Length: 199
Image 1 (tube, one colour):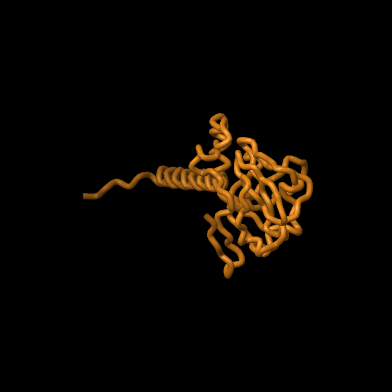
Image 2 (image 1 turned 30 degrees about the vertical axis):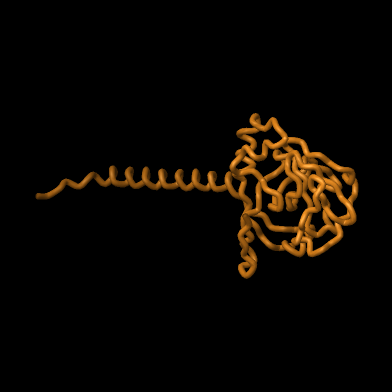
């Protein structure tokens, strides 16, 4: 039995439709991935010795999107516990201050909403207890402007660089809000011999 072949024009039309559908799917996938993750190259020394200039990181934006979508649920000082993507102390974030033309910064989360941050004898205290900060390699933590005990609002975070002697951070400009946070660093992917995953 001989099966009738579809006309050449119909085959071309079907091929064009399939190509367009594939292109649209690829664009949608790219937009989805771009909304959920970001890639940044480090141009600062404030996170040395743990991050260096020229290294590249992948940032998860899921937590920031979650907090923006569900911002109306953040009422109590422990509101950060209500999100499955809530930031944890010690995690590293990329954020942008509201000043015009300010660059994105990378810092470590030290204080969470509701925490009280203070400084004593070169140590950082969270709720009166000295924070164990192995990542600063014993560096002395001095203070600039925000030296008195700071109690963080429900939507605020205290961030500092690991290079405590050379870091513009919450000690100078104060706490940041979740609206200013672009995302959390989840991976260093460049250079290839320094790939690392961050919880």
